[in-house]
Image 1 (cartoon, rainbow, N blue to C red):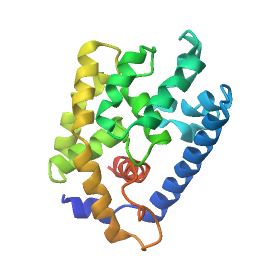
Image 2 (image 1 turned 180 degrees about the horizontal axis):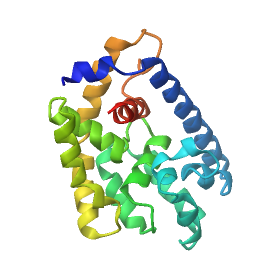
Image 3 (image 1 turned 30 degrees about the horizontal axis):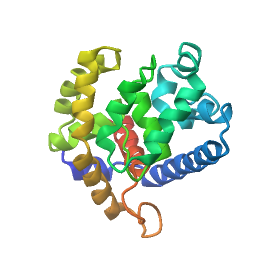
Length: 214
């Protein structure tokens, strides 16, 4: 199956709705951050108060564990977020996450938090976006993407080897995500999404739809 065939099968109205739902969460997060709210902000950042805040945390029920099993978790999440907001290069996101040393706040959850805060710079590296990246890498081959994704499954574990694997794939995803954005323009009305420039919440919505459809 070609990339074009995969895109032809997607529900683009649903993708646009998904994007704007997440964009609203992004704006809410920034509001909580600016007000210094150490209750509402961390709860949303790790998907506790709203599942759309962090799918990676939600899918593995990690939000409560991040807050409960890390000392001064709320303050530390706020400090990490300040670093995410300062970034102009998302390739340093894994190093920020590793340096923070928070249990269960690994590259999946952490990169999603970075994107929810700074979506024109930072992208999400989780199962869905990695799978979409691999589909493009393999020219639309779902079977080859599935096979390679299996090699990264253990990357959700907190180990140095897992961290290195996910850091490497995180750094290599930018080109694929930008290609998703470029191809998607053929399926949209001019005012629907993404006209302000690459927004990685948009490519995340596409990746999620691709993954669910296949």
